Image (tube, rainbow, N blue to C red):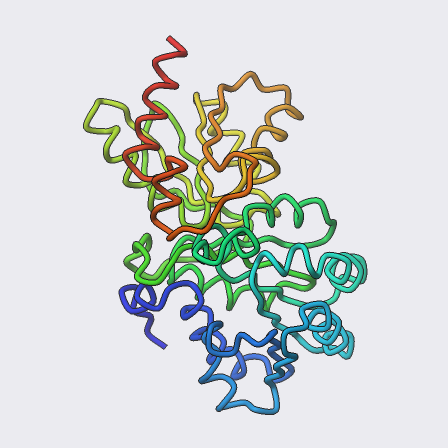
Length: 320
């Protein structure tokens, strides 16, 4: 099908995921979709109506969700499972560890509304630790798409990956468009979105568009920024990260806790390779937040383009 980036942006990451799922049965006859009472929220209404024999709603029972998806996958099938990211990485952690990671089953776990997008529901639904938790488990590929089009492509690509996958969906409906044209999506290979010689911004998920806009702000101040979309957290594109570190200062930007996410992973890589690279990690401090609307959180934690640009400018000035 011909993909419309504007329409996918309007749908948001959940809707873009649901649209991709309607296409997958034509490619994978052995596919099944499981959800923990999030049929409509996951954008799966069309899929459920078209393929009732491939759709399973387990109810509000997230641990059973993983167990049932794993059982389905153990019979040689491909299983997608959807729930809130906060439940996927914490309420189901034992099942994710044993049934997905340890057994290396073909379960594609979709963490809906990671970050702050369901922040109005409070700390139980705000998810800023899923990258840290999933990266601590072996064998799981971790995808973190930047916009609706990339969410669609990540969902499709996950089916072809042999083994467990975690897809982290961030951002809200009517999300900013990063990719306005079709592009080649390859898990494990970062996308260069903007050239620049002074500094490299490595962003993931919803913060890719923020990084692009921050780079534009900084260009007007004479600071030329390269921007990378790190849509795969594992396997990390180590080659492109190391090249960025050799060329100068690196800034990571993520809608995730500052501990254990993209920034920590980049710093660990530089440390392992004994690289003396200046790195600024932009993310969320380790704390619980009260309920608020999505954009209020972005303002509070300086995750807007203007705030990110200001932090980078200050950081660079302090290095001189």
